[in-house]
Length: 90
Image (tube, rainbow, N blue to C red; front, side, top):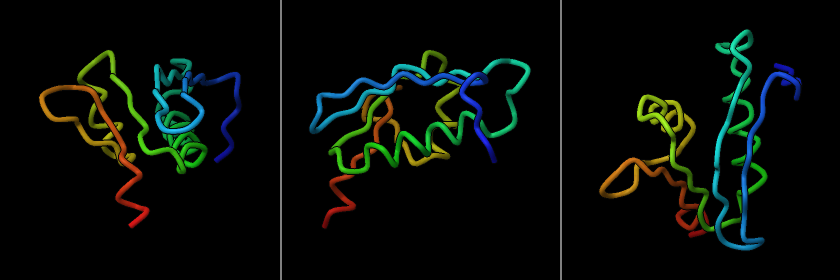
């Protein structure tokens, strides 16, 4: 599926080496439900696949399931989410 940039926006900050932090993934309300956000998250995962961690903190706990479907795990003790790519390097 094509993912036009004008329908969605993601903000990720990284330290250029180990950790990328997903601040938000947004999709225009008229285009929600078309897998645009999922495509953006998969793009983020691919772009940062060589980083040790990809982390985020969903503003709404209802969004946790969305991130879990894309490989994130809830971190111990709370809502922050994380992908640890270290396990993929073994």
